[in-house]
Image: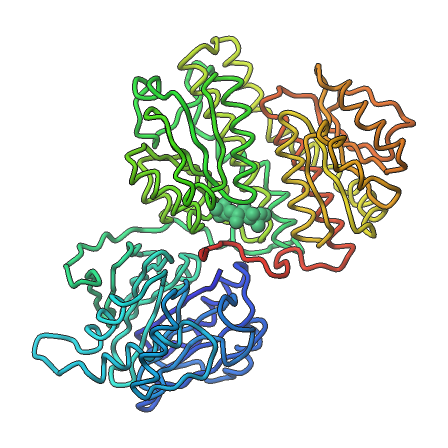
Length: 615
Ligand code: M6R
């Protein structure tokens, strides 16, 4: 969502921060800005639009030894230069960049207005800038205490809401302060220079030594040292970690967009996710990080999955697969609903979150609520060191590589593959036979090559996309395991092409959505062979009878009558456990090509952010 980069050290603050901001561009934003310390004052530049606008405003002067910078995704106030960060206190002492939401900013504003502070923006952040300035002005110079640090701490004790902040003060050119509650903030440790960032990808051009701040911690940085305490002044022992970051993974290479790159990376991301995770006898999966023994897992009576967006669709696949192969009842909840619902949970429930970023605020809050109630929590997560990864009792890293495109593609297929492997593992602990286990392992190992086969149909799918890109409505229909893929297909199409799309279990169509079918509303059917296939054919007939066009994504063994289907995209025959993955690929390509045909920016769809760290 919003991005933070702060720098202290050598005479290159502006250039380091611009590089960092560019690395955060993929997260989605509408404006950017930076403040640097120059000649005894804080100088600030802000621009709406892309980081390139800020870069040209900064010009050739890329120096400075201290600075903070930000990419904003509007929450309070329109997209204007005045609302872009950094915000400076009205006495020009303090500059701050902030991610999160300060819920009590109106009360703060009233108080500060009474004290003579003025406001130039509609943001909640400016209230915090002025509050820090107020405490700084009041704070006495006390021996052994840092006045700037004390004023930040004191101000934060009054904040209700969430924050990741970086703050500088005009009187303290060799100090940078950061703090977090609910919004990620990472310290990067260099040689004679230190950094702050909201995402590790914005640091790795300078250092791979990092410290992940925890909630309610404050870091005080100088060029050569740093110190972490809590907001209430308790000492914190910093854990320095080495991040393993392949910078080429976050570059476009020969691709025209990250979405395209990530769709085509799926054979590799799937291979990486399964590598080293099968038993020697080839009958089950192995996970090193669950931190639960087989005996403890046998005591699990129910699994609750929590997530948002695409990851929630992966949870629905998990529900089908775990119930089918491990016979453990599964529930799936939107994390945003669960956190406020106070649902009664069985005491032997295992709580599983799925999150690509590991920073989605609703998923994190739902997990914390489950932990507070004493439940064991696990996560499937693609971001090493993310807050969710650190706060769960155990979990499974996806190893899918950084996903830059806002629309999730390779992270989704990697999540459902890992859900299939969890179903296999839990199944083998219960009633799934050795023979059935080995069939599943073989199917999983064959998957990357089968995905490569499906990707070869890219041009054919592009041609279909050209025929259908002008429609404004579309239905995605599938049954059983294909229902979550129908939901995901509809989400993918709407988020990147702005076409109104809905996903339904095909049989539900008759209960309402059929009213939408006409020559102006095509349907994408996801069909696999098996008992339910004939029922799907009947649903297709119902659409054709109402003059709706039908695009069918079908497994190779489905016999489809020619006169019923307008377009067919085939995927290879495979074990049912991997069908959702193979069927996802054409759906991703179709949405991708339709969006391109409509001239949309697939990597940065309007209004969307990669990681949703505000409620
Ligand atoms: O990082 P997460 O997996 O927790 O993100 C959850 C959703 O915000 C995310 O999947 C979103 O729906 C994507 N834009 C889908 O493409």
